Length: 260
Image (cartoon, rainbow, N blue to C red; front, side, top):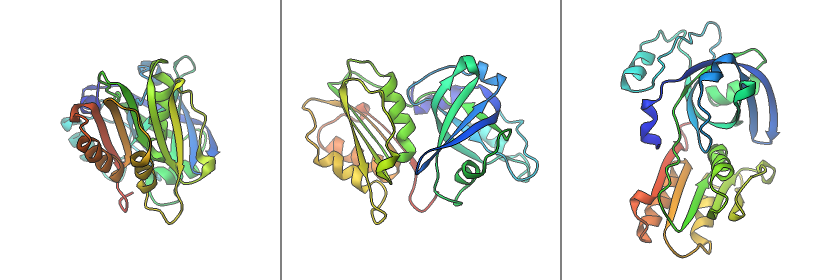
């Protein structure tokens, strides 16, 4: 399973907000619930999905079940007045028996539909999601490197939670505030460094610097790089320059500075 396999999944769920909580200064957790979550496979790791948000007024959640090219064109052909905004999110925690799923939203003000929704969500608000599988696609390696900013925090913490307890390596997560660190269920051999950036720092710069200056293990890693576009592109180039095969690197940009 990998990011490229996302278009093959076809589980769609319409859910409602069950509760909300400000879990850290920069993160709002929204718990959604609904019987349709019974059809969603519990994949763990960095399980992600397309999230469809409510509009002011009427929202049409009669969406394509599969987000391949045909499904995406069908989505774009929906009337704009009732078409729900779409964003990509990671499962923070899934409790299938309770039909509940947690989603962590980065709260960065009234600058986009997802953050705006997270800051104003009310119990009973309806949303929809379409399963996209996992991006986590490890290959045999000597150790594991995980790198993200706050947008990739749920993915990295999910991977740490579900990877084999014998795994060894390093994880780095950049956050805006020291209090944004969350508890991690990591294997004993996986270290986790929280890298705090200042308001003056370019997002991603601190964590890239931390990785490049760290005393990393010898041998060949499997690397998983996500977050602001500069993080995966810069570190992938750096790793390849150090002899890491491209096939050992999973990378994707979650967002680009200036285009939230």
